[in-house]
Length: 391
Ligand code: TGC
Ligand code: FAD
Image 1 (cartoon, protein in one colour):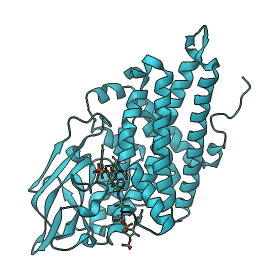
Image 2 (image 1 turned 90 degrees about the horizontal axis):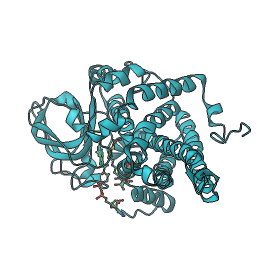
Image 3 (image 1 turned 135 degrees about the vertical axis):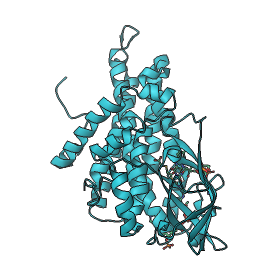
Image 4 (image 1 turned 180 degrees about the vertical axis):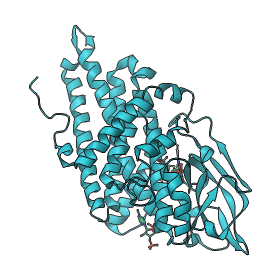
């Protein structure tokens, strides 16, 4: 067939700078070489290799938009491209970089003191230390403001009590960003703290029976009257908007990432139907199959074009809260549809590990839920549109 631009019909690649193209290429090579070869085995064993973090650090993908403390000073667009490449392999690997960058390095950089930045950022950016972000609790998921974890000021610091659940990296983390309400005050008293794994009274456990995002360690954090020093407080937070500023960054990365998983499933389906002979001709020669391929192409490219516009707006310093909810909701939903169609087009083989599609599909069920479940983003958009909160 004549060469054409079916893969990139909107010429997204032509909008990338030389640096962004180089970063995407390097990261793609890294992912193919370091992550892809054993992804099936790691998924089967529910295993994450913590030695990957220093490699992520060397690759420059931790805290990559930071200009100081060892950050690579890239654009947000480059961060999106990195998330896209990582999630082509597995959503767990995208989670591992996005939690560290958006939910740990970002709040320390934005809300921490100079001492905290100097102490934690170089270690986190190089991957010598691993971080996690504790907001959700068993009874406070979509509505984190009903959390029970509290802090109270005492002479030599703060005492933090409570528990967090469903926390990415909790079982392997050295550094814990913990959100808590001041004892006997209302939800507006939210503050963030930096805790370390050896603090007395802090314990973690791992959720062992997870059927999705299996490579990523997820767990609970128990905070049993943990006495934390005064300089653990993230002094410069300003209520809930500080919490949400972390989520904005992570949701932006997820919006790109899920399109990586979708692209992978699209390409797997395309190759399969071009080679699979059924009724004495390739599956790809059937109209119904071509329609499915075209729908994958349409949704992925519309998603990427919107991600590109959002990244440019973010890099220009514009407010992108509505764009983020649109993309987090829509891209997750479309990526799930694409993976499901891909699974279907592979027939029975689509159920096999070696075709990767089922793993992506099951992972995307997590991604649809965390960082604001799908319907929560509809409600955020509805609230912003009408001025009426349904929460
Ligand atoms: P609301 O009244 O809307 O807002 C309170 C204050 O925050 C401001 N704000 C924002 N600021 C910046 N960015 C945003 N996106 C913001 N959204 C709101 C808002 O202006 C207000 O400021 P102020 O000055 O007036 O006080 O708050 P609400 O209680 O009505 O919000 C409700 C809701 C449902 C939207 C919110 O609670 C929510 O987003 N829930 C979803 C929970 C969630 O996303 N959890 C994520 C946990 S972390 C995670 O899942 C990590 S997974 C990581 C991985 O492995 O990749
Ligand atoms: P619920 O809030 O109970 O929601 C259940 C369902 O009800 C959803 O479909 C939701 O859309 C719907 N619903 C809720 N409220 C409304 C409403 N008002 N109207 C209509 N529908 C509604 N959290 C962290 O803090 N840090 C992490 O690192 C982290 N990592 C995670 C990793 C994994 C693998 C998973 C699965 C979750 C992780 N989370 C993390 C938690 C995640 O953010 C929450 O699971 C998510 O916010 C949803 O909360 P929930 O599970 O309690 O569901």
